Image (cartoon, rainbow, N blue to C red; front, side, top):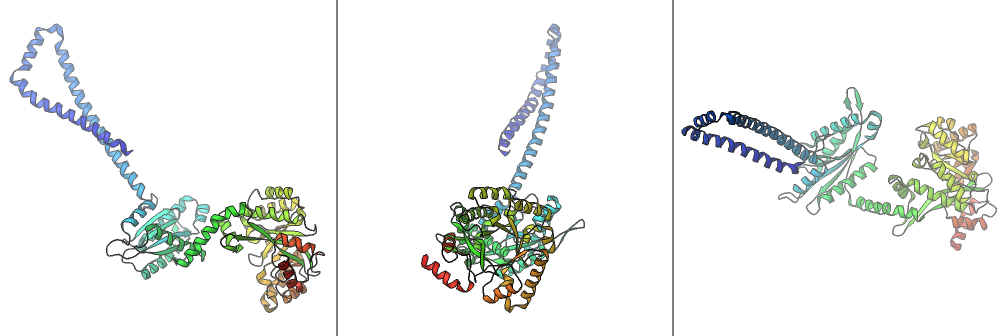
Length: 538
């Protein structure tokens, strides 16, 4: 819009110049015309040649001159107004390019420019402190109360943030619910920390909008900026500190830590390699035996994910599964593991089943049932040999939707188990309203249960509940013969844990089924011998 402005100015300049010439000419020629009595001579000449209609011609010239003058004045006024409007729009565009229109704070672009202009490399400065801030529990405000209420909350946050930082600091809204701060040059690390505490407390206070109270929190990452680093380095450090604050529980602040940064870089490498690892089936299913506690007969396996990274070696499942969830790849990973597990199990004894964990993201995928049907059709595995394990937190939000999904899965022939029972809501409603076939008691209640009376009472209560509802129970985390004897005393149906066997590869399972486990009977006391055989065979 602003590139048209010079042309408009040139046009107006020419028009004003023409008007000036007209009036100057009139001022100069008027005395000359009067001195030589040209008006009188024109009058006499027109009387002598009345048939020429010179009077009308002169009147026409006068009218045209007046019209031209009026038109010139009108166009000049109009152009002035247009120029003023364009100048206003230009200034507004420049402001919008530097300021957030909602909160009035500077935006990311302006903040970066200020960092470059006023960083610690200026004379007399050897460090500055900056912060990155992210709001906690802000999304539910938009979802439950609408974006208008969310906008009001953001404005309120900006006002509180400016009040705590002070006029000597710089506050910016980077976008969404992200804010950034550069503290005043005189602020020390201790003062920056105190300000961060005040900000966390201030943002945590309820926002009252016409009687409607909004409650949110915030997480803050703090970083020191020295002349040796660039503004991008400082922002990156503050951002990683913010991630650390959020991972520690949110509604708090954290300083940038170089050791944590190295972990973050390693995490970033894992995340970048994860997609290719899934596609190339580098993440493979391992199988931990599930045993009939009364008979020691092998009944099946729980499928567990394992990844041997080319550079980092064995990556703990808790690490790469969390990354898969955060990056939206957990669905693809789950389907890849299920496909591999079904293909492997197809060649085993038909009495053996596989239990597979389904994440909340996978369970709520509208294509879950169709994807499982396709995998079963491709692998040829009988669906009755599959049990899907689902946590209570996955289904607690909407029992009606969860029931329909579970009924669809059971309609295929698949069994469903309620996983990690005892660690979540553990509500009777989950068991009463949803068609589960089995309960899995979390390992935290089973391991070393003989020495923990409180856990004994919890497990006994779960067993009594399951018996009343005619549900099978699997006890995870059986690691000693004492653990086994206690759950056996409670008539627990199934068990798994290191006492029987750790998770092993599909090839190891096939070998053991042909040798040590040929009769599908596992003797827990001979686990060491089995491991020795595996090591020898490997």
